[in-house]
Image (cartoon, rainbow over all chains, first blue to last red; front, side):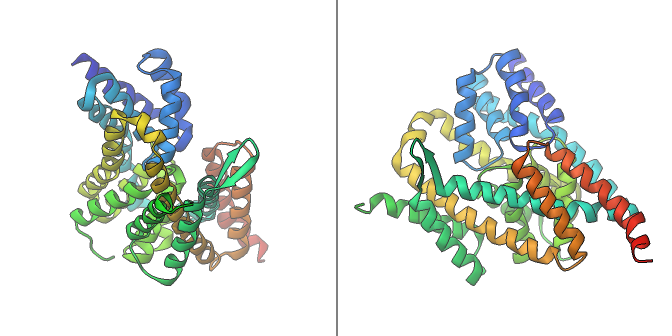
Length: 186
Length: 186
């Protein structure tokens, strides 16, 4: 029981201090989980990172689930994950309320006009990063093209432009293309 | 504003978080596609405002944005169901994977399927990011284009924290639209 509480509190602490999202949380996890609590090793943290790149979901949530399960089984995974999202849930309620009430204030709208184009710029960084890491795999000779991903990208782009298909369906088409590649004789 | 049921919120965020790789800003174009382009419940500026708010809260960006969309559409209950919808997919996936992650990392069929899925998600992201880019240019064209380019270059080429980039952009918007723009047009 004390282990579950400890998991909950530790991931809540990381959740409070994890500004920036994405990989910004990694040094915190290393500090709290690997060094202070010694729940996982540095190698396991590297494994979590590579699994996170392959699976859906934010790396912080993936890490919380993984560490929780390793330390205290599946209940531990649930407890750590809930702990990790609780601080942001509370802040969303506060900030969402304040923004709904005061968001149309003139100066806040001016701030937003500066933030909106910036966000689109940051989204482009994320989109191009995922595009390059998915379609090209670096190896000692430079890089090689990841053919299943490349074909799925082309098909996905055509579907996106021509149809209103659900995103899930487009991604499942990608999964099908990947599977097809595995069974094709080349 | 069109209505959406809490159940629909839950399902949509479950689906979105099931298929989104990469975390952080990678999920934003997907949420935008579903809520702005497909469901037409939010407009583009709403979406960008919520992303800006999500950035100012600690924790995973994907989870924060999901909760803020839920809060905007259905209040506290909306935030809660969106939160659960958003963290269940990574929780379930990692719970399964943690049992046999050695196999997961090396199995060629799984790798081929994931490769195809990542390619398809990249396509959806690039297409959505392109749409955000074009609609951004409809108002304050030069200002938006400049800020977007600066944000892209800083995030791509330097290791400056995204938080500082956003903070600066907010200040620039505040000053430009509050004080500078009027004087320029005199």
